Picture 1 (cartoon, helix red, strand yellow):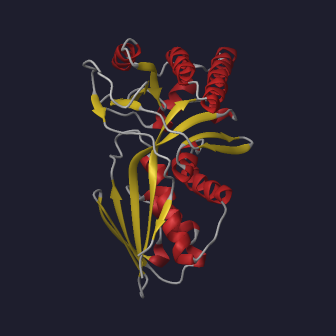
Picture 2 (tube, rainbow, N blue to C red; picture 1 turned 90 degrees about the horizontal axis):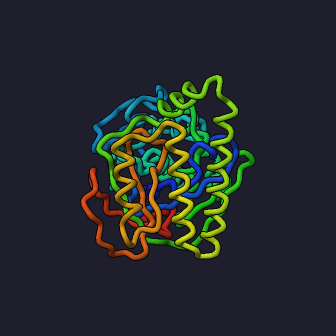
Length: 310
């Protein structure tokens, strides 16, 4: 018997940094997926296979180790429910170097496969909460917003304090460019904290403005007001600059997209200091001029986490 599950990656459209302080963020699930196939064993051995390599350990000696820290974190969380080992195969349609929420998607897909093995019937709320717990434990920090997008699919409003999520069954065309490098999220967050040490009021004002962009953007999604949503993305980009997470390369990418006919808005997606720029497009096919970085062929998807019969 095998248990197979998959989950989509995601992009954050609005609410970066504000979501770390109990405010809402807007995300979109994308059509790049992580698939986990779990095959129970009769002994205590645990084997993990992926493009990142092969890892073997004993069930009784589970420890959270890179590059499989999220998979091992899930196994360790439910270790008391397991009686034997397993073989785990991970297939990825996205690179862990590109900010498509691959860690969250892996954590979600692993949870789904494990829940099938254990015959756990869980609510969406419980699913998100448990996966967020693993991501935070492994990373040390994080809102869990990308977890909610991977579980739900579509466009998602997420807030962690208090815990809230809302799925919008809508999709809209995107254009995404990767800058060629990515600074780890935890490192960027710490850098921002250091930059605003002693300037807490200035930081709180920026977070307040990002919160307003996100709140208005979410309202525009509900109304189907895509041009207005794009305008909110443009506005939030100015606050990403104010936080110090912009770079000349990222800004040049954003500038070109914002000036392109057919692009409603563009901004950094995620923590910044590298990674991706996302643009909201009027239609699926639009002529994009030369933009520094590598264009990523992605689209929003309504498909969230899925368990596949084997």
